[in-house]
Amino acid sequence: MKISTLFVMIILASSPLSAVIPAAASDYTLDVFGNANMDETVDETDIAYVEGIIDGTNEATELADANYDGNIDAQDIDQIEKIIVGSADSITVIDSANRTVTVSLPVKAAAGLHTSPCREFCMLGVEDRVVAVTSYIFDDPLMYPRLLDKVDIGTIYEPNFEAIAEANPDLLVTTPGTYLDSVLETVEPMGITVVSLDLAKPFRYDEELALLGMIMGEEERARGFVDWRSSTMDLIKERTASLGEDKACVFTTSISNVWKGETEFAPGLLSSHMIIENGGAEDISSGYSSGQKFEMEWILDQDPDALVLASYNTEDGLGYTPTDDGQAAISWQRVIESNTLGKTRAAEEGRVLIMSYYGTASGGQDPLGAAYLAKWLYPDLFEDMDPAELHREYLEDWMEIPYQGVYVYP
Image (cartoon, rainbow, N blue to C red; front, side, top):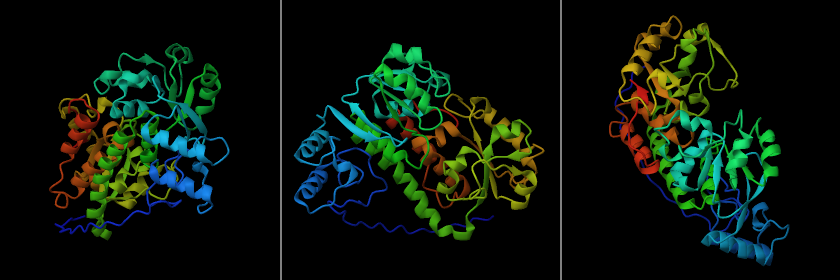
């Protein structure tokens, strides 16, 4: 694949937003009771919409019942007003497991049973109100220095219920899915409110972060981060839209599969987290089931222009901890010389990129991964974009920790 210099003209256009309509022009609906017009926030337009429901001029919506008492009346307007000014003593939300949960406010003691909410607690700047965190935080101490004095409550796979009881948080954030029921059965009888948010995948990240921000009283910072994240994603999308058939075809998998000597490769999380697509490339595994594995013969037949390998361990030389790219270079060379993926044209031409999953893909980090990939694939198109500087902004301005680490190689 040859990429020529492209000249891109970006035309910015703006359009007015409707004031009070059930389906707003946002990308998501904030699932908070009080969001009467079903847009991405709770504001004065929701008061106007509830007034219209009471007057009979607007249709009732599920979230218009702000105080969740089964009626839509003036008391809901009172609740919306309290939500807006931050004086509500509780809010009712629909979490990512489609559970309706009432959370008492303010949350004075929070806990996270997986890495993603713990990371976002840091990004929202509420570490002083966090009392317990997942064990995984202690595997990456430099990344989470302000969480190291919190109670270790295990993982979603093996929760330490005794430690959870000892920490006694007001709120426990865990994941939707297989392990949720056992957590609910044990934790809710303790009087602890459980909210299920993934906060790791791109599909609902913005709305989940906005919801967590509202619960923790940091809605403005959450929305600021969503805007920052979107600005990079939108730029890449606009500039790569003109590539058409010239988009690079990429295969992605975990680098650990190479180390294991496997001859069948499953797409890595970079694929499911849409890093390849958001980076302006075509994912050759797109359209197949998430559990699909691809034999080397199939990969060779597809003849991808590039290989992108996800690393989940600092032993590969990537992540926040490494201070130089020496080990990453060794890992890259091992891929190039492997008797599996090393046989592809992409490897023979050195078109292999290793990316640290934790730092370029998980949750709100995905614009960083997309930026690194887009810059690597299309350097002429993104001559003015510096992914390392974006990463510096993320770590210093949002996570409030020093910039360091190795996140891609080469």
